[in-house]
Image (cartoon, rainbow, N blue to C red; front, side, top):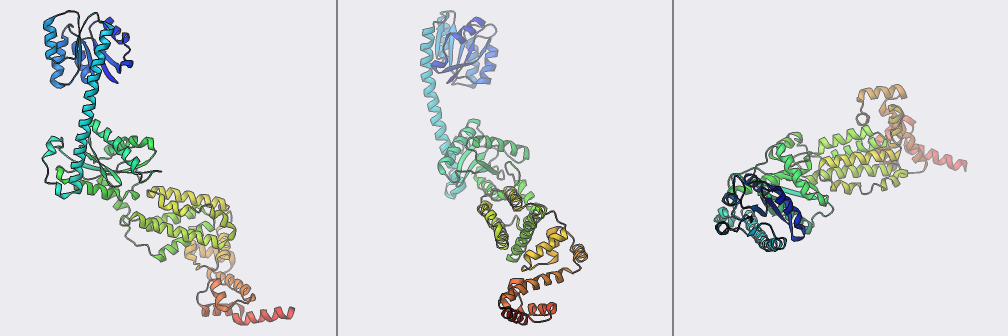
Length: 523
């Protein structure tokens, strides 16, 4: 469809030309009209029509004068002249200005349609040639950008920089990464690249190129402020909207020499590498790196012992059905695991390991909840699918909140009753008052006093008595001493022996023998 501007000082002519021709059927549409020469120049500049149909004689400024002035700025503009006079001199001048047709008023409809069809063929060929030239120019420009970025041997070939319009005041590489159902599908990635190419070519704002798993844009302008970064991100998001992909993008440092765009590319790639820690929905800029380094300056390496302790806390928090406790443990996990110095994969692996251990403990402690846990079997896999820390945090909170709801929700008992109940269920674990106090969000000394006032026993003594009672049950079943010690939570057999004798007055083996003889006697 070609755009047409109609220029005539007579309203009846303007209206008649707009309605008498079925413009759409001939591949045209009338986008505006003008009533004089100066208005025509303004609207030609505004609309840049494919064809201007213009009256020869108008007050103030003739049609030829309009054409002469427009030709200074746009030598390829197309004009069809209307004239009320069969004036050879005017026609000769019009031909000299390269007009496409010269028709006499009153306009004959068939003659007008014939000229429009002829002009349409010329416009079509011109558009096809322009498109081919644009595609060829973009191909060479893209090839040159990629050669400067990835092929050191090509950097000496700078002859075409001027010819291809690459002499800019600054250069900045933006890298775009997309995630969605079609991750890694080169067909759709190429479709996105073509769409981005059309967008940036039409606005003459940069060159789109391939950059491995990413799509690159070499920008003319500089993106170094939050407002500009937000605006460009909205533009990129609009381009990808039809595919419903999640978009991430980073801008490298700007450079003033085309030969240095590798520096901009490297800084953009390094910034995008830390996408996992970026929590804003916009294009990443260089200042964001310092912000992330400051926020996640944790240099501590999470050891296996740390992972075990964190998994214990998480298990305890779920076991007492406390969403608040879970939230505190997850926040502590983030403080310990998340670091600007670690890779995304390392951080996710730590999360997955802790979650796996906590879920295994839950499953082993109570067989009744195993069917509930089975419904969340994909949870660990989902950890690796999250593209940012924000997404991982949200997904994890939602998972554990739902899990606690399925397991029965938050306990309504007092905190001491919860601790006692917890000890009864987990006496075989390496329980410590300090750890439980942290899970329940209490000062350990204060919790110890509450516990002593409620039970009449110190925490460790109460734990020992619970373990000894469980040990007596196992000894009555004829288990060996070391098996019983391990099952009730004593890693050292001698220590178990001394504790048992302290509370029962006899050794574990003697108790087992007595129980054995007692059972025989009763028989």
